[in-house]
Image (cartoon, rainbow, N blue to C red):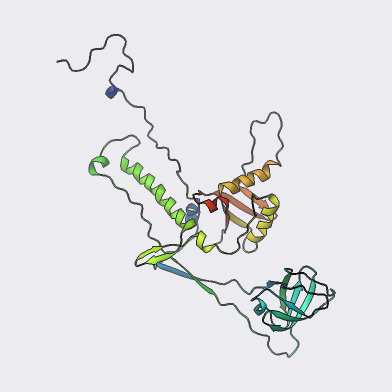
Amino acid sequence: MAAGDLLTGVRDTSTILGNKQIIDMSNKIAYLEPDEAPLTTFLQQLSREACHAAKFEWLEEEGLQRKSLIATVLGSGDTSVNVTTGEGVLFKVGDLVVVTSTLETLMVTAVATDAVSITRSWGAVAAAAAAVGDELFIIGNASAESAASPTKKSMNPAAKFNYCQNIRTPFGLSDIAANTSMYGGADKNSLRRAQMIEHKKNIERVFLYGEKAISGTTRSSGGLREFISTNVYDVGGFASHAELESYMQYVFAYGSDRRLGMASPMWLSALSLMGADKLRAVPRDNLWGFGKRVYLSSRNNIFCKKYSVEWGSFWRLLIPFRYEH
């Protein structure tokens, strides 16, 4: 019996044995998300120290708080002001306090829980009424010569901690699979690359969404979702230019004038729209849009980098980081 089939006429690709035809296959594998871990990449560029225990601890201290709010209406003739509940402890006899809405300076003469007794119009600015919610700013203490020492106040640092999480992304190949020739190179190498991408994404998700916990020797690390509980600014909808400028006051209140902003796709769209209405087009233009990722605000700037979002509430976040931290 003959080996093969008899062909009549012109041979074409439909009649030539498929096993004989060489496949034109790219040696590169196209990954959907080749590097969707920008926060992890950024942290790898910073100076760092090794952790020598499964639990890492540190201390944080903010310094003495200097601001409070008026809790009840302050009349122009009142000699006592009620402040935010629990914040009377911030004040001591001899403190000079400015009502920022009227610029009147007050001298503290006594403190009883959250009721602060005051001398009005300490200086040139006349006493004036102030509303509930107006800010009180402690500028310092003034003591008479040979006076007794004012009440001593200081901050006790807060103890913080996190756990080291053991993150594993396993993969394996049989001996035969490892030695089988394949497009894209050895499967061991392509599999290692794919799993390294997944491993880096796992680390990124812990940084963003993790919550610290421990059970025996199994530990999980806390992420931004757990640690960011204060200094959260809600624009109340789609961000406008004016709202972003207000947000910048919080972002740059402390530290250097540069920030890295981990921005969700929604925030990047908002930034693009802020710049789009400033663009001017002419008939010969064949490009349209706004692609800048650096937002400049007075002397400050924030470089925005998109992070991958898979959690509903994170679609709306812009998370700034201080470079020095």
